Image (tube, rainbow, N blue to C red; front, side, top):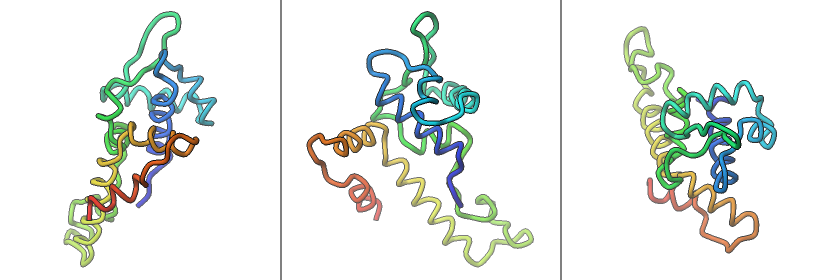
Length: 154
C-alpha cells in the first residue's frame, strides 16, 4: 500500500492552485515549474481533475485553470480518487478473494485500515492545508490539524 506519484502530484498541484489561483487562473506550466512536476504528466492529471469537476479551464488570454469548487468542499480523498487512485491496504483490492478465491486471515484488518485512511483523507480539505501552510509561513499559529483529524476519527 502506498500513494503513487499520480496521487501525490495531483494533491500538490491542487494545493498549488489553491495557494496561487485566487487572483487569476493558473497555467499548467507555472504549476509544473513551481512544483517540479513534468508538464505533460501534469496536463494528463489536470484533464482528470477537470472531468471530475475539481478544476475548470478558462480559455483565452490569461487563461489557465482554477478550482471548480470551494476549497472547503475539496477533500484530499476527492483529489486522489479523481485521478484514479485510491488507498487500499488489501492485497485483493477489497474483493476478499486474496487467497485463491477466499478471504485471507488478515483481510478485515487491512480493510479497516483502508477505511481509516479514506476517512482521514476525507477529513483533510484544501482549505485546511492552506491554513496549515499559512501557519507554517508565520501566520498566527493554529492547533495541529493532523492531530485534530486523527482524534476525531478514533
